Length: 316
Ligand code: TXA
Ligand code: MG
Image 1 (cartoon, rainbow, N blue to C red):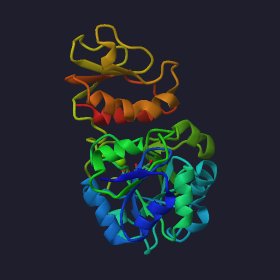
Image 2: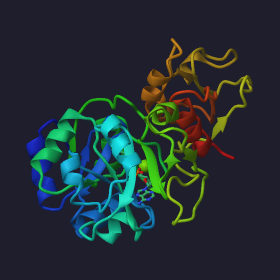
Image 3: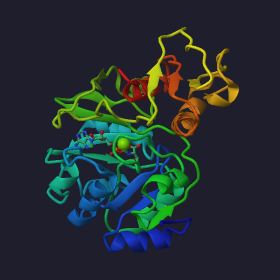
């Protein structure tokens, strides 16, 4: 069983010999391994049960080091990096040969980000290689936002989980690619679209669900709890029932037991809601209920990214 601890040196020692460990980030916990070591990459795919066509994000600690992994940083990417890094933003950039094809699933671009978590930044600074890290959940399940979530699902397959407390943002990074000097959002995430557009102007959004390995972003089956999740239309209420659960924004629904509901943010704060989203979905998944209803959020701020995840997690 994985040890959970706060000792960066232990994580470092495991990573240096090619093992994979759980690491905290501000978005969700990652399952990290040496991005330059194909054996470590294979271990990540195996532990997550992830299809090899789904590429990984490479994490580093500075723009200076990024130059070793990518051949070009377009101006728009540079502006975003300077504004939002370290932070919940992932950029797709042309890769150098040093990055193994296994990491990018054969694509010519590599997804890179500088995460904003003191413990993980410290760890990255102390290593002489970057860390490939997908979210530390079994493929298709809800992403982990605490060290205990990682232990619950992957604990018997990894030696160590670095505990940096609950993730502050709570949803994965926003992914942006660049073609012909046009920025495209491939995954809505921890930085709201409005904030991106304030820096680089209008961007296109291409996050349609797909199982096409060449099309980056997310598969439609992502983020799902084991219980069926039904995303309600705006303004609708669930069928009342003893064994009915609900994920709500500000106020519980009448007709359902209070203990079968989780309130994302009683004050109506979308950032607080994002921080609670995955933990509350996990909690609902363990209750004696047969179905989870989710209330849709407004599409402002992090609301759009949360609705996107709820839609992908829902039975459609
Ligand atoms: O917040 C995050 O991004 C977290 C933390 C741990 O950093 N990581 C994360 O990784 O969410 P993962 O593997 O769960 O999601 C990475 C996404 C996948 O949907 C993958 O398809 C996409 O990034 N991706 C990776 N490399 C890509 C590439 N070269 N082109 C297009 N999409 C890529
Ligand atoms: Mg993931």
